[in-house]
Length: 528
Image (cartoon, rainbow, N blue to C red):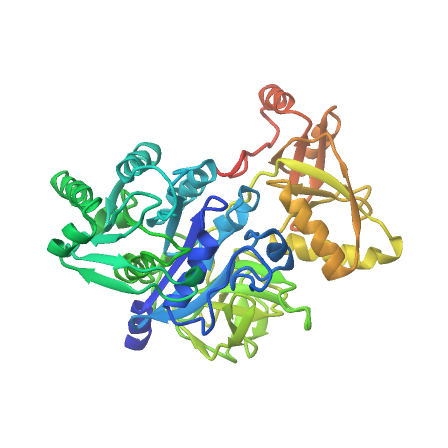
C-alpha cells in the first residue's frame, strides 16, 4: 500500500540517551519548542519557584528529584516530518528501561557534557546502542560553560567508543564563550543571540566570513583552522558508516540557551533513518505494508491519577493502525479493543485515530499485554525476546499495615509488569514477604514511593544477604536449595532465579556442578 510506505518515510523515531545531568531532558524540551509543540515557555528541568517541570518528566518523584526516572514518548512535527521522540532515564539504575526503549527506536542522540566528556553511564548506554545496532548522533552540550577543547572531545569519542566522530557543526568560541557554529556542509557561519533563560527560540544571524573575521576576531581564525583540519583528514559525515554504527555525526551547542538546537533537529530529519521492515522471532522480516503489528516496549500505570489506568506503549512496526480495530495479544491470542488508543505527549494524551510504522501508541487497559509482546491483526507476529537484566540488589518487602495487604499485592503485580522492579517469591512465603530485586538501589525508592502513593500500601524494606542472581529451572532448584548461601525464587512469569550470597560462591557452584542450569542474564554491573 503506497500510503503506508509514504507515511513511514515521513517518520523519524529516535531516543535521547545520556549520563545524568548532561542536559538530556532540557534538550528534549527544546526540541518541542523548536518543533512548535510548546505554546508556552520551554519548561525548566529542575523545579524552582515560578517554573513548571519538564514536559517529559511527568512522574511526581521525577519532579521532586529533578531527574528522569522513567521513559516517555513525545510526538511532534518538524519540516513536514513526524518525529517520535523517546526520552529515557539517564540514571544507570534504570538502564533496563532504557534498553527496552531502544528496542522501539531507529536511532539515538547521545548527549555529552562538554566539561565531562564520556562518563561511565554514557559508555554503558553506547554499548546498548551497539548491542542493538542503533546508529547515533552526538550532541556536545553546555558549550556555553567552561569545558574541554573541541578536538580533545573528538579524540575522546574515537578512543573510548571506537567510533569515528564526524562533526556537522563546529563551534566558534571556546567553552564558556560560545559565539556560534560553522555548518561544515555549506561553510555558513551562524551566530546566536541569547534569550531570557532560553525560553524562546534563539535568534540566529548568518555572518559572512569577512565580517566574522572582524566581529569575532578572537576566535574565528582558530575555528576555521580546526574545521579545515577536519576536512583534510576526511572527517565528514558519511551516511553509510553512520547507519552501520561506525561513525557518529557530531553537533555542538547549548540546550539551555538553545544554541545549536535547530542544527541538531535538522540532523535528525536528514540523517535518522525512517522505519524499515522489522526482524521477527523466526528470522523473517515484516514488511512495512503487511497487516498492522506493533511491539510493546513499555507498560506504565499511574500516569493519570484520576482514572488509575494502565498504558501499554506500542511501537507500530507494520501496517496502518485505525482506532477501533480488533487486535490480538501475542502470548494469550486474546482479542482486545483499540477504541481507546491514544497518542502520547509525556503525561498528556490525545485520541489516536490512525498511526503508521514508527509511531508510538498508548493502548489503555490492554491488561493482557506485557513488555516484549507483539500486537497484531490478521497475520500473527512475534518479536525476538527482550533480554532480562541481572539484578544486583535484593531487599525483602513487607506491608506496614496488614489491612492493606490486598493493595500491596496488587501494586507488586503492577510494578513487576511494568519492569519498575523485579518481584521474586519464595514458594513457602508467597506474597507475605517477597524479595524485590533491582539493577540499582534507586529502583527501591521508586517502588516504595509508588506503592505508598498510588496503591496506599506503605512498605518497609529489610536487607538480604544476596548479591547476585542466575537464571535456573525446576530441575536444578532442589539441589540449589539444599546448598548453603543459595536460595531459589520465582518471578510472576514463571522464571526461576537462583540467588547467591557472593560471586565467589556462585562461581564455585558453577564449577563444581556443571549439570545445574545457571544462566547468565544480559547484564551485570549495568549493561552487557
